Amino acid sequence: RFLSGAPFSIMVFSIAKEQRDDLVDRMSDSLAAIGFHNYGQTFTDTRAKAEEIEARAFSVAEVASSTTKESWSAGTGGERPMIELIRLYTKKAAELLQAEIIRCGEDAMDTSTGAGDAVGDSDRFDLSSKDREFYTQQRAEQVLAPLMAKGASFSKVKLSTKSFGIDAAKVVTKAFANNASTLKEVDLSDIIAGRPEEEALKAIEIITEATLCAKITSVDLSDNAFGEKGVRACTKMLQQQSGIEEISFMNNGISEQAAAAILELLASPQSLKKFHLDKNMTGDDGTAHIGKLLEKAPGMLDFKMAGSRFTSEGAKFLAKGLSAGASLVKLDLTDNNVNQEGGFALAGMLFKQPNLKHVNLEATSLGPKAAIQVAQALASGCPQLEYLNLNACDITPEGVPQVAQAISAMKNLKTLKISENELGDLGIAQICVALKMAGCPVVELDVSTNELVEKGAVAAAKLAASRAGFTSLNLDGNYISDEGVEEVKSIMEGAGIASALMPMEENDADMADDVDDDNAEGLDNLLAHLKL
Picture 1: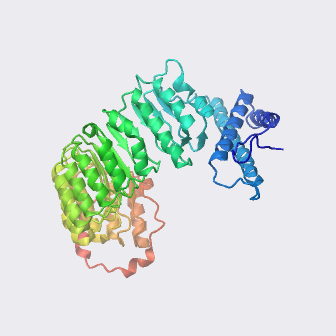
Picture 2: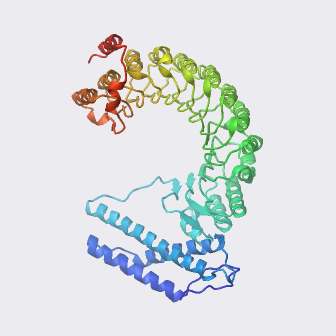
Picture 3: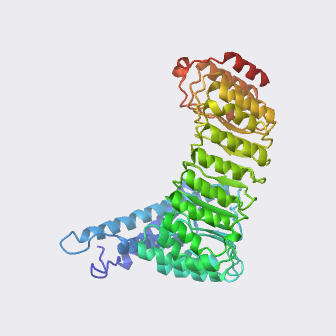
């Protein structure tokens, strides 16, 4: 019933018009029937909606016919790929029909309860959704129509989760040009998924070059996994957009060579205020290039380089680069082996950042000595600090007294995460007393996986109960006895914040008796400081 309109070598997917029309008719009837029988309403424009669904499903199969790597040659099951494309076409149509039914049903329920239609930001255009789709030129023209309408004046455009080929990318060029006087921020993350490399790189080149019609201040290129070739495909934008203040390359295969390309091509690093890299394999050698770029960006406010596989040497490069300015507000170096020497270098830089509010050093293996220096630098040099994450930093009981002393000077701290550090009851009790002494407005505390048995957990609960607006206490992954759990719940309930206690599914009460407590008197004295 379904025939290819060209030889197998061309791989064109086509279906007879009467069969496509038949599918549209059936979907239109289904929408109308479900609206009447399930919601007691008449869904409007069901024919137009069904035509749109069919066209989108057809375009998915059409694009797949030219990107699938399977053999179409004679003697290798030539009909099998066509059958798979037909299945893809019908499956996609069914998924889109289901999504449309759910959407129409939600609209019907909103109408019945008197709720109005949701109103989006009038200057923001956003394509992102759970529905991933390969865009053809025709489909791109359809969905980007608001950008190309007369008088369009969008300042923020997000194209994420939709895959653009060369023809669709050319439509983006027209859309951006129509908003040239107002366009400022473009989110180009995850826009070439599933495309052959050559086509994907050309699409990135076309779309990034299309930004040159406007004065762009923010661009997100994350989740495209394009490596050095992709960075170089953005050459014209990186070299000619002189006012970029925010740029992101997360999950983009930013290797040493790709990092060197960013340093080489970014013409105006002095404009940068936000620079995000995450889930890349940059390593120490690549981080050296990032450090040099940071030296040229003294106005940096928000820097993230998580999961990038650098060690203490890389941390030193970053510390040197970030020391070029004193305006940092947010820093995230999660999941890198910073280690002791790298921690010492970062501490020297952090001391000179008076505006710093958010620090995430989770899983950086600082060790007790570096953790102490970092905490002391933050306490002395960062009076506005509100968020501190030292999870999995190998602080150990050895480093607790001095870390706690530093925390006692953090007057504006709202969130402290210090899990997975083996601090024990005494260590956590010391931390809680320090937070009370600081008089800080802490509302979130994570002390999970710290070998707590009872009194450390009780100390954390008492601290939570003493703080107005407390929202989250995480004690999971410890060895808290059944009696300790009950006392913690009683304290939280008595303060009216029972919901702030996070689930304790991984707590192992059976281990409680196996942990010796040689600090009973010291713990009792600390708990006395936390008396409600």
